[in-house]
Amino acid sequence: MTTWRKRIIRIVGMMFVVVFFVVVYGGYSFFNPYDEVTIDIYGIPKNTNFVCLIADTENGTRAMEWSLSKVIPHSMHPDGCGASRLTGANKTKTHRAVRWISSDRVGILCRADQKWIAFWFDSPKCQPANRSYLFGGGSITIDISDADNNAPMDDNQLRDIGMNDELKNDGITNGLKLGDRSTGEVPPSSTDSFRMVVSDLIEARRYRDAVVYLKNGDAQLQANYDKTGFLAVGEDLIVLPGVYPEHDYVRDRDWFIPGTSDAIEDEAWQNIATEFAKRYNQHRVSK
Image 1 (spheres, rainbow, N blue to C red):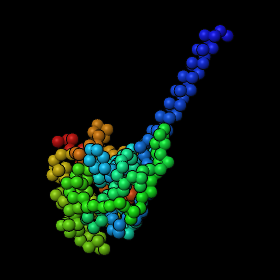
Image 2 (image 1 turned 135 degrees about the vertical axis):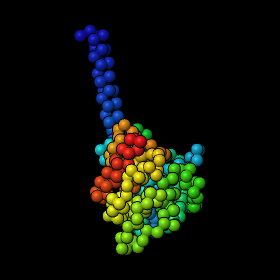
Image 3 (image 1 turned 90 degrees about the vertical axis):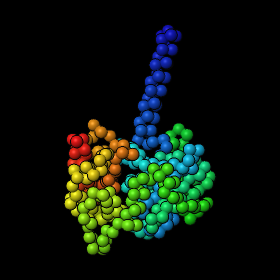
Image 4 (image 1 turned 45 degrees about the vertical axis):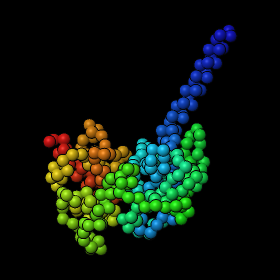
């Protein structure tokens, strides 16, 4: 075999090897996002019903998105996301995965008794372990009792990091009376308080009452009252029932119905929320 033929075979072989590793690496990275970090949080304050991670960056404080996966990996902002919810008034720990934002100062944002507090951790406490330059990943364990400092966050600071839906939820228990939770009393349907009531019922894990509330509601009337935007539900991705894929979810425009997700929290609630959103959305595009 001539020298030039050997060189061609060698080059083709090297190209095959390179392509093979690129495909393997790409497939691995698709199902294992480079910036995904698993986190275990301990010492969560009593009565906390919302928790997420925030990072202090050159561009201000930013919220880390939850890293979620059922079939296809995706991420979601903690505002209105089921992954941000804690069940049980005395739950003191949680295990999650986030899309990590590199920072020398990372915080755990908690809402307990309608008060928002950020617990801040400086480097090296806030640096993930076992993180690879090639594959990313990694994990971190944080005990809130070991925070370097903590500070309350006001409404303006919360809006800056995108907590718009959660701030609306704050108004529920401060003014809206939902009846005695022990009796399962369901509030009357109301277009102006629709989102607040739904959020509060789901936060209290009153799925049956939430189902009844939606059955008593009028999707078309609610769409007329809201005037703009769609209703979104969580499945493998965040979708707009009835108008997807012609219309995609836009976070600043649409409302994500709490308690819906790819890991179904309550099947009856998932079904009624999807059906209500479908009627709502189809009415929106028909106008």
